[in-house]
Amino acid sequence: MPDSAIWTAFLLGIASAVSLPLGALTGLRWTPSDRVQAILMAVGGGALLAALTIDLVGSALAQGHFYPMALGALLGGLLFIVLNQLVNQHGGFLRKASTMFVYLRRQRQRRLKRILSQIGRIGVFRNLPSEDLLLLADVMEHRECRAGSVFYLRRDPCDALFVIEEGQVDLLDPLREMRPFEHLGPSDAFARMAFFTGLPQATVAVATTDTRVWMLPRGAFLHLLQRSRPLALAVKELLEGQEIRTYLRDRHDLDEDRIQGWLQEAAVSLEEHGWFEPPVQVDHHEEAFRQAIRDMRRAEIFRDLPPEDIEALSDRVIYQQYKTGETFFRKNESAERLYFLHQGEVALIDPANLFARPELLRDGGAFGALSFLTGSPHSSNAVAIGDVSVWILRRKDFDDLLRRSPKLEQALRDFIQQTSTGEYLRLRHNFHAHSVERWIHRALKSMDAGRLMPSVAADVAGFNDRNGAPVAIWLGILLDGIPESLVIGASLVHTHLSLSLIAGLFLANY
Image (cartoon, rainbow, N blue to C red; front, side):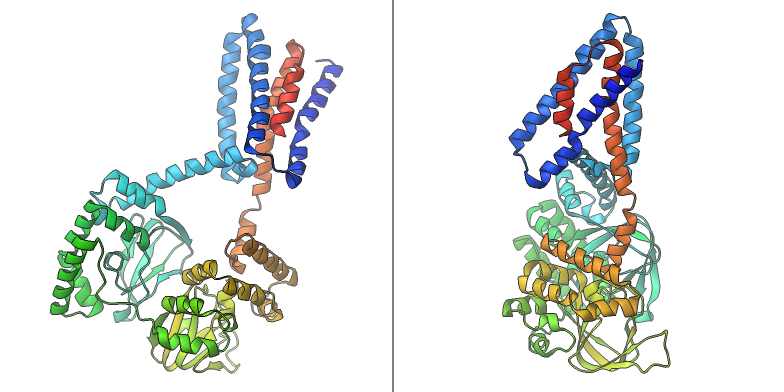
């Protein structure tokens, strides 16, 4: 090709591609309506198809080059598919709305297929109609946990049924010094009995390796239970089995008379109303909590909440008792719970400095708050000195309250901007000043957008995990530009270049 043709192709390519940054700059000031976007895309796409079919394909067929053209189209299409998949796996699907929607739709289809194959193995769901299974699969949530993560503790409310996708989970027996009594692997389900009966958890579940699980929220299950006759019959059959009786007797210390009475009441309620009350309720001590929270030390963000928010908070806390020497949390563990001390004494101990005097907390103080609210790991051990009673607020319940309470959100905003919060992250977790400032900035922006505040640990990990996404997006844009570049170059080889093609490419890119 003569030099003039090369320069012509180069300049025309620049002319068609320069609309990419122009479109981005325009989008900062003006968002066109769907109708305008559709017109621009239709003109651009139509011009490109016309150039391909008339200028290239028509010319190739007229010269008897069908087979080379067909082979080139087939090989080029396959190469594009492979490269597009590789780029998308590293975040390149974010480069434009169409590739993002296609990627997410395929991910959802794969997700549903995996879930259906796993929940279909659970006895209660085994014979459900496919439409009921799809409803359950569509609300299941995915969760990734590091080795050592605790899914739930004894006496926790049962919020979900867990199905292991990958990894290992141990069930620990609180009645036998936390010894493992069951080792679970992929496709195994756990928290089954508590989930189907509504009882508090009777065991402890811990990930022994990095683990991925699917979680079925109990609220969605109860909603379907009232609508699905096959599911109600399957649950009734479960309640009539020996496994439930053994669970109630061995794990919740219920006598035979109480078990028999509850099973009869549950069967009648399930038949008439589509749901039933559990025989044992989670202990909240709501009234005492509402009186104590206003004067609770080290829990300033909860003090000025309106009565309705205090009421919602008291319905979510869990009241538990610990014996002398029991540990609430250890240094470097994930801070998934905030503790409000009701009665007793707790020692906060830094295991890295055993010669330092422990910090002692007495009645009416919160602990674990700084780690909990920032999402950083615990910086000390917390141990019960004597018998202790506490209220516990779990992360998921706090996040739910945060979505519903503007007052709590504002209190959290004020908290993360306090000097003491930054000092805690710098002194206890060795964060650089600029890292703290970046996290505070991202946290405030996230809350402005109506999302949950990112934890310090998740923010750092997420930033590191997505380091390759910008490169993948750039590669994706480059990959999308190759076909139109070939059209421009090939048009200059055999025929004149249509100005409508350049205009169409400009509009489509714009």
